[in-house]
Image 1 (cartoon, rainbow, N blue to C red):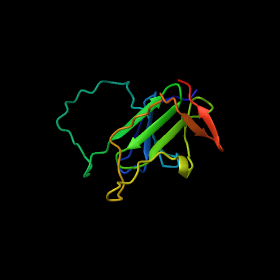
Image 2 (cartoon, helix red, strand yellow; image 1 turned 30 degrees about the vertical axis):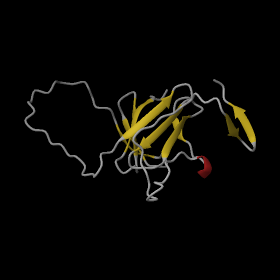
Image 3 (cartoon, rainbow, N blue to C red; image 1 turned 120 degrees about the horizontal axis):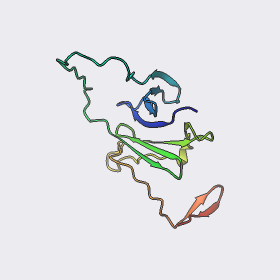
Length: 152
């Protein structure tokens, strides 16, 4: 059985996704979810390091705004919503039928989750967080002209 995914992160520009699995390996994906690179988990065995650390090199990206991400996972729904501070769209991933892997849901234009344009400037807006309310008691449009009453 393949290891399950335990975390993920979008690149600062929102062009790639890195997924960490339960074995500690990292897999880098393009937006079409094709694996580009796999970084295996570090080896934890062997001889202990006997050298002292004398310096640390830290490379930080130069950005006008810090990349932020939010994730919301509905355990019963097997759906993962992903929002990035650099994108006005919300990514939707669903658990595949094999109950092991996740797949990106490609939604129609009318049902895509995205933030509206700023009404004054007509510029894009970006998320600062994600919330999902599952307590609705209203009838929702469902299919071609049908309605579905949500259970409470």
